Image (tube, rainbow, N blue to C red; front, side, top):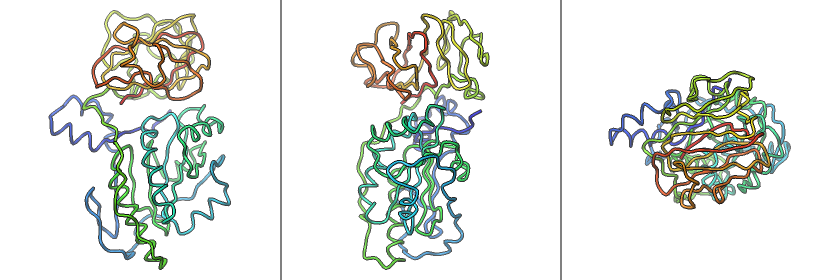
Length: 379
């Protein structure tokens, strides 16, 4: 059973919610997810978003834990084991734990790519540690296609059995661990957001590295200026279709419930509860997903959000998208929806709804045999 958590810009959203008094938002957050955040210490000083220590000396660096090595790597992209080992020497390293069907991970890519472009020649090395959530994400060809799609040029290592994930005691997608050039972990950030603080840490550690190595290099103190994703004050939590993955976070509304490894005929109830998904038709219950078996079937979800994504497989399947009982309009269609239809061409994340603003709606997905769905995620 999966215990890991995909998480967004938790700290900032919680603060906003407290200010406006949106109690419902707070109660909707997974309690474990609320513990995610960031922590960084430079020379014994905990950094806030706008605070940087001026000292450039290394004080008591042995007080900080050394990063574990890359362990059990199944494959390498954009590098080789020997080349990566050489590159890691005397570098400030940002380890980015990600998986290619995670929308929260995808939304961090513009920052990672910008930092790579800006600081690679000053001593920063970004290593993408791909730790899969679903079985199909272990396929190196699928990961390579994702790396090409998102134009990730820094080294990627495939941590298919989560051995490096476990060595770091990591539990989140995305997660960033930044080490100084001596290999000590000096900053962590779990989830989206805190980009300015993370970049300030990078700059500080690069300047310390230059001082220690006697290099005449100064990291640019300006910050990357990108449009950060705007989160709704309230949105439906991530929903899992696999009986293992949904354990402890079950939003399956049908009274028949999960029945592990069985094919179950589900009937749509007369009343639907918000933020719960409902099935109609015959579906096979799998540990990580639901697979449609009958000639026709549908999923109905009353939700609150601006964007809706699904992780799906069943290559060649075409699903129909309805919003509030009608074929979705062009103004609400996601990037992967064309004329109210989504073609499943790969095992991946699909953006099916992208409305102009956040709101509450009822989503219906009509599918055909072989359609397989893993999660709903929102934005």
